[in-house]
Length: 432
Image (cartoon, rainbow, N blue to C red; front, side, top):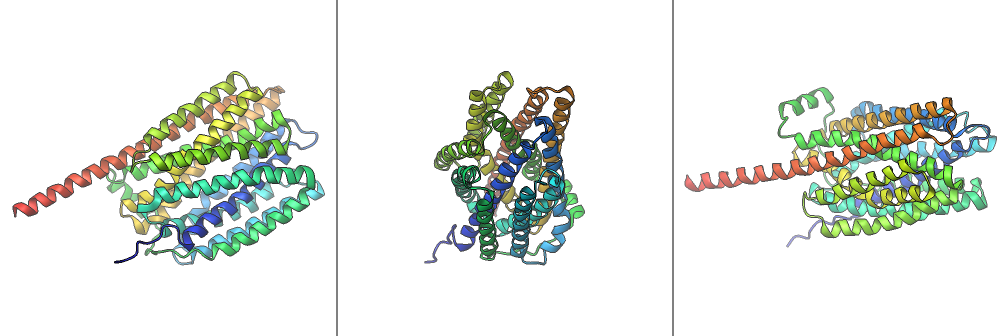
């Protein structure tokens, strides 16, 4: 009797470890680097938001176009090398942030940090996403990504408050040394990922796009994956930035920022355990809709009053419940292309996914920049225009949830049609 293949072997564990280690670097950059820019002496909150908006435009532009150029190399080169190169560049970005902060020039060189960090993230994600697609079978996608998300959330329990305390009480130097150790470990772990099955990959976006048009009905779930990525980009990343803005505006402390993130993330693990227990194959709709409604309701609360209670409620609901949408989205992005027997087109599919994701990120970031410019010109300290931007992002989030529901329904319908065709084929064979 053959032993069943393990879902969580060394490669799968290494994938999760890479995700968590990269998340720590992301916490450092997205929370504390951004936090420092928001507190630039002599600048208004609106001016600082514009500066951060420029940072994200550069970053997201690099991420959006990176797959277009890396795809040709990925089909020939070991993808672990891409992950390792990305980890090395991310290490460089951490060192750059440290030295620029020491010299007091951090706000001046924000675009340069965006370029270096964007290049590192581009290399890392292009190799990482494709390694994941080749290493984890479509049969185990949902369970794997749910567990991966739980571990990822665990990272956000431990590190935000820890790094916040280190910055506020020990200093930036100690934290920079810790980050360098994490970067080195990320490089090491990336070499432990060995795909279970490698496919003969192509990278011809024009031909793949033509295939999608020719098989329009059959690949409809995949089309909705791309659409959902646009709405994910237009909501998820921008929500994170706006959360940081409103928390810093009201609480003025890195420790507070980290503490809230840690507490609410701990609660989100309970959400994922609940999701794993009650999830049924291609039946995530019952989890998606309540999440979208709850998050949208708390955004309305902030629009009515940006009190500390309203912000904490939004922060809590979003962090605790959003993990479900992230888990569904990640598993469908990695799995649908294989469910549709498009194994050789994994690179093209990820490139298109990244384009839609990046376009969504850029769209919402531009809206935030415009809002910040309006608040800056009008001298509005209550950031009314930024609240309007928050409302726009909330609408994108609702669309994100609805698009995920379309994917689930499309997969259910496709499965039913396949079952009917299979039964009919068996009947015809019996009659013969």
